[in-house]
Length: 464
Ligand code: ARG
Figure 1 (spheres, rainbow, N blue to C red):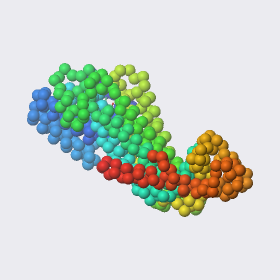
Figure 2: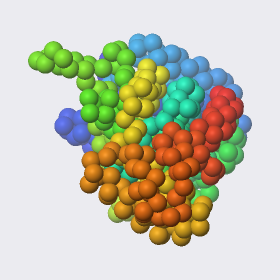
Figure 3: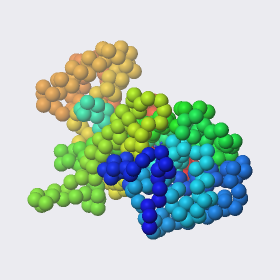
Figure 4: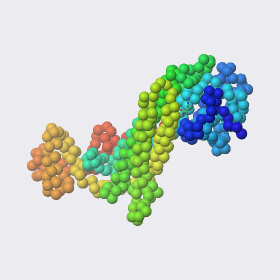
């Protein structure tokens, strides 16, 4: 069978060099747009028929052909020919082969420039919903785990030095907050990209009476774009999406880093099921957190995608340039990473337990109650700055005397440091008690944790 002619065959003489054909094609990676491409084409054809630019018989043939092509691609029967350049040309060529002349009318009033801009928006709209659902699953896993540890206390670190005691639940809920921001950032991004460029043509629009609102509505867009010059080259939403992914990756990476540390013999805070660990080919004793390390490592690829996208956009002259074809590689790659990392992170969270006994046994290390002691003095009228100094001196004294905690100092030693201290001071000097005594809204004690858990359970229930 003779090769179908390229649409520009009449303009360019001679065949494209084979190396150029391979260099320019995007079909190898943009075929995953096939569903949205077909959906977009059906909406476009329906509009063309409503505007009497094609007949109803032609519309019927186009729709039937496109649906068949969609089924062939879905079932793997469709033969992709990379010389077709991209998914748009591949589908159109297959349609013309299938239904003949009616197929040649599909591209009326349309350019691949507004077509691809529409396709990516449609694709991202769906993908954002998937990523949001995966975020919700991860958040639920974190909340379920938090519920088990409301009354268990762990050290919180600043500068990776022991800082204040916190509820393990509060620690887990801190990630629920981060992922909630990621969720709403995606919602924002989706809202901004949910406008339809179709009808903008190659750059200037069309002299045909296209009904842009009709196609936009049929495709579920909230509005049309309002400037064709901008519409065909706008990929801001790709950069925004990749930024959203980058922050998700950052949050996942921080969780991963914490847990990699927490699984060490030195910390021993958590244990993840064997199903989510790997061994070593040489050292028989090893239990490695490779999944967490990969989550951390894959962050690099996601940031790279954002950098690539921003750089692709930089200094492109108005308007559409083929540079933009590269957008999809990075969007797809980041999306794939998001899907796999969010899924595995949720599974790991669901299969990890905190070694509460061991954590509790170590709470006396690191003077976690020092700030609470300073606040004890504040409650007795000592200015905070002075209280800070008094407690600092007491901690230094403990260290000098080889005492690991403030509670072992005698009342005389306390009173020598400050005469406002009385025997009730010992009630303050225990990290778990300090944690229970937090009273500020959003504090990291069990009281606030329980409130947050109630909030998130309600909130996350509604999200699905
Ligand atoms: N494959 C192209 C892309 O992804 C489609 C648009 C090509 N338009 C053009 N005028 N060459 O950007």
